[in-house]
Length: 230
Image (tube, rainbow, N blue to C red; front, side):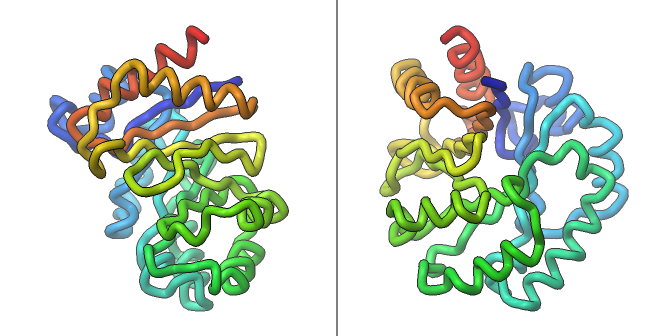
């Protein structure tokens, strides 16, 4: 099993310079999830700089909220996606996933529209889908993701199932926090229990991103150690 572990961004207080350069040189991690792209389109020169500096990392790019939360996978969303994808072309060969986080009010009633969008943009398993409404978490919809050959994002977060999903040969797990969103400090016991459940589903590759702010770097480093010792 290939192991990729990272944090959800690098602009945090634990990053002494708050730069990608520091992350690459000091984190000891081999992947990164870019979250800033959800809030705004980066400048072209930023993407080119990341492509030049970040060759040692495998990337996951969070898709802009215009596509997922405003246009909600409509025709306008597909047009906006093309502009977004074009912007990331310099980095694309290092990108293993584009992360599409669903808005909380986006329910399975809209699955026909989502299916149309998935078929149109043709990302295959690089399409990583993160539901944020509990109506999505049932076996029929997980099977739909398998049939579509897209990657269902497993999440460790309050009020959601902590199941490890495998709809392709890859597992993508986001660690948001147990006792509260973005604030939890994972214990060794919790990390080992999660690592065990990952190995049970036998993915060829696993990608884990920590999104728990103050503790994300040390938790990610420890999870990487645990996974490589099992």
